[in-house]
Image 1 (cartoon, rainbow, N blue to C red):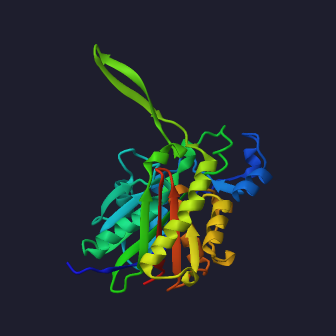
Image 2: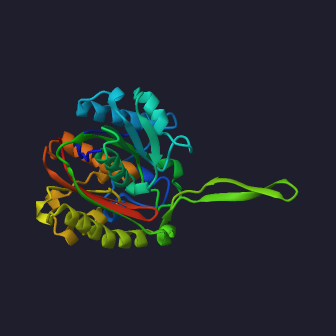
Length: 330
């Protein structure tokens, strides 16, 4: 098969209507708006109500992305859902496929936590470049409020819920200019959402383990140290692959984890502040949703324009991290 290029032709996003400001969090844990804002840059986050689902948020973001790309749901060949918080542990991508009426599409979930969108982008590109599929819907969506310990002030101030999506299409001009992906399972303990089981004896000599997942656990200092070191390195690798220099980047769109991380990465790469896209003050850390959510907002605000060169990086649990350099538009 003839190798093809890819273009990102449309984006969309969706967040719950309910907003939780820092000040309201002081009613739950001992903290303050000033403490949260100065350490994280977050002022509020959106929380999904019990009646809202990952499927509903992801489907809304997807409809917007499909409309922006100018194609119909029936034309989508593949749906990739990057999430760590599916409605169904067996996966939610197929539910979204049915909701959208994307009758031709193969659909599956992909889990790489806060790196999920970048890993999904690279995965989608392989299907398109080899000529297997022409139109791919990539979704990043998470409802982390399901797994937050709301009495743990180290973590409950950080996370929010949301979804973002993009449509990738086969193109004669390859807009994905470079990428790099990395994993280090030896540091898994720095950030995880572990399963905890209790032994249960079914029959004499026959035991199983049954339980549930525990709330998000994170060593904030170690995660900050990891991101501050590894993210500039991985972006440099992706830029080298793309044969581009830092000053050719129009926008830096990082995983929206912490404003201090965004500032540190930009400084180490010598990227000026006006090129850094940041919306975490309004949404907090939405995991796999954060990059496409920030990307879509910047596109709809008219910041990101066709042919702009974007450097993006995701990093988080696993530990996983990755970067991609791409040109916006057809």
